[in-house]
Length: 386
Image 1 (tube, rainbow, N blue to C red):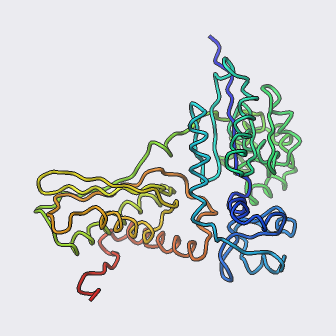
Image 2: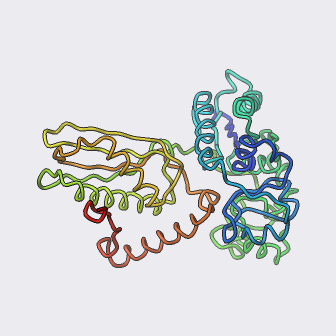
């Protein structure tokens, strides 16, 4: 029995943060807009009008303003980014059997088998148009037999377009493109390939795999397969199913608020460490409280995606304060993070977020080397508050 043809769609919200800012402030439309921190900050996202000046994500804001002094810097709608991302996620989840949320603004969708009931191409295009109508956000898409090809098709379709690569036409699409168009080929690998006269994906395809392995190491074989249109069509749902949690049952029941706060901080730090180790952010926090009589309370809230201790500790303490019956002895506390997605570059570029993330990663390294007990976070007690 022949395997069914694979159909993988890729959808990417165009200049997502900028698009949200424009929805909330239409006067920004058509102008060079930069989203991110001021002065010492960096560009988290920029409009297509700003890109014409050579500005790109992760560029220091100071340099961006030198390139385009008239650019408008904003991040006033920051609290809306997670909301719009979830809105698009909910639309996709209600209309397709299997999908992967690759980041806050990027999705892979497996439409394999749907050709029996719908035209796959028509369905993917209509889904994209529905998202645009419902949310007002521009979104580009690609459709092909493999993940990497669909993502490349999306990139070629931008801004706000859709490109389908028919089955059997993969190399026809790929071969004219430069090697730098392949996802994962950075500046160093690009230069290494060009030093050997390999400029296009067709050049890659015509180079023996053993030569590519000498040039690009382990990546060589993967590049050779991609150049021939061969790639994975697997969709991962770990982002949706996976969660991270830690809990602790006390030796004796405790009603001491300072102790409980210290324990919440410890559990949050431990779980956040796991997030960063796995290069993930969480979009939902749950606090579990089990009392001395075994009655158990769980409370959760969705949050802006983050992997930073201070954001998470603040939310955990807030949930605990709202739900703990003050003075009632507690037997167990637990903290769980869910709705996990990969850490995105853009989400770590606002204001001092980069510095904080780097600081936490440095602390993580110290813990890895010397043990978790060496570094702990200060907890404000009731006495100190007074």
